[in-house]
Image (cartoon, rainbow over all chains, first blue to last red):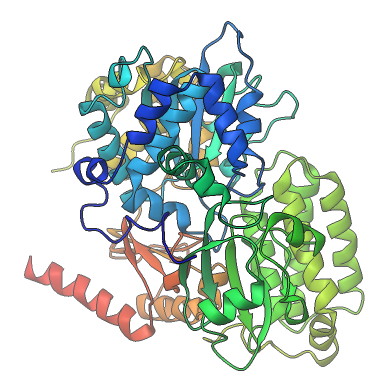
Length: 425
Length: 168
C-alpha cells in the first residue's frame, strides 16, 4: 500500500485546525451522509464496508450500530472510547493530537445513523494534549455548524462533550466506561443487555474506538470501494500498527491487515535490537505472545485467533534474545493486578497471587511447584473472571508458560536473576 | 498567605463552574468526576473537605464523591510535590531500561517510588502505560512528556528544573 491515508494529515503543522481539515476534504463525508443517506442507509453503507472495530475486539461496526432499536422512545447516546491504555498502544493518541476533526466527523456520522442527540468523547486523563486538541476541535466544529442545531442545514442536531477519565484502565471496557460517565466506579456490568439496548443511563448506546471513527470519516469521503480494496476481505481497510520494544525502528506504521508478523517486525521494525527476536506480543499485553517460530502468522483477526492470540489494538511489542520472559510476564501480571477493578474474586485475588509467585521466581526464590501453581491460577482466572481483563491477564501469562517454560525452570533450579530484569536493553 | 480551605470556601469557589458542567449530563452524578478535577486543579489535591463541598454543590451523597476519589488513581488524595515525576515501567518502557531509570531517580532524589521529597519539590510515581511506547522509556513531569530517556537526560532535565527555580 503506497498511499498513506490514516496518517496523511498527521505531519502537517495545521493538521488539527478546521480550516486545514476542510480545505482537504474534511466534513465532505458528513455533508454527503446528511444529504444523500437516510440513517439506515448510513448503517448499511458501513456494513458493506465490513469495517471492524479498531479498539480490540474487532466487532463489525455497522452490525453494532444496527443493534440500536429504531423506536425505543428513549434518548440514544454515542460514545467514543479514547481511554487508550493497553500497554504498547499509542495510535489513538496520534489521531487526537494530530487529526481530531477526522474522529469528530466520524462520530457525527455515527450519531446521525443511530439517532443520538448527545455524544461523549471519553479521553483518558493522562492525555492532556489530546484533551486540549479535541476540545479545540469540538469548539471549531460548533463554530462552523457541524455540531449544534441543524447541522449543515439538515434537520439533524447533535451535541458533543468531552468526559475525562482518571487513570483506570478498566474503563476501556465498554460497560465500565459507561459506568464512569454516569459517575460511578468503573466496574463492568453483565451483558446482556448490551449497550446498544440498555447502555448509558439505561438508554440505547453505541461505543466505538477512536480509529474506528476515523475510518468512518474516510469511508464516507473516499467511498466504500476504496476501503474494501485494501487488505483481506474479512478485515479490510488500513490499520495503524504501533511497534515498540526491542526493535530498531519503533513507531507507527499504516499497513493493510494480513501482513505477516515477521515482515512487520523485520521490514518495518528494522529487526531486533540485539541478536535475534525471542517473541512478539502482537496486540497489546492482553494478547498472548508469539514465539519466533510462529512469526509467519498473518496480522489479522482470524489468523491470530487461530494462533491462540489476537490482533487486539495492533500494538506490537517485540522482545529480543536479551529479554527475560518470566520478568516480562511478572510485569504484565502486575499491571493487570493493579488495574483489576475488584468486582470479581478470581481477578481481584488470583492476579495478586500470581504476581507474588512471579516475583518470587524472578528473585531466585522460586519453588519447584510454582509453574504448575501458576497454571492452576490461570485456569481459575481465565474461566471465572467477570470481564475480559482477567481473561486477558490469564491468557497472556499462560502463553509464557507454554512457550518459555524452560526459562521459568532455569530460574527456579539455578536461582539466577534474569539478565534483562534490571538492566537496559 | 495561605488561607484555610473550608467547605464553604470550596463551595464559593466552584459552584459556578460545576453548574456549567452539570448541563452536559442528564444526571448530576455524572458531574462528580469533572468536579473532582476542578477541585484538584485549584487546590492541588482533594480530601474530605472537598468531598463534602462537592456533595453539597451537586446535592449527592458524600459517599458517591469519595468512592470515585478513591477508585480513580489520577485524583491525588494527599499533597504532592511541585514536580510530579511519573515514570512508566510497563513492558515497552521496561524493555528499554525503565527500571534503571527508576533506580537512578530514587538514588538522586533520595526517596522511594510513591514518596515526596522532604522539600516538597518532587513526587516520584511508577505509572502504567502512558502511550509513548514508540519513544520509550518515557516519563511525564506534571502534564509534559519526556521521551527516549537515559540517565544523562534525566539528570539534565532535573538540573534544568532546579536552575529554573534558582533564576526565579
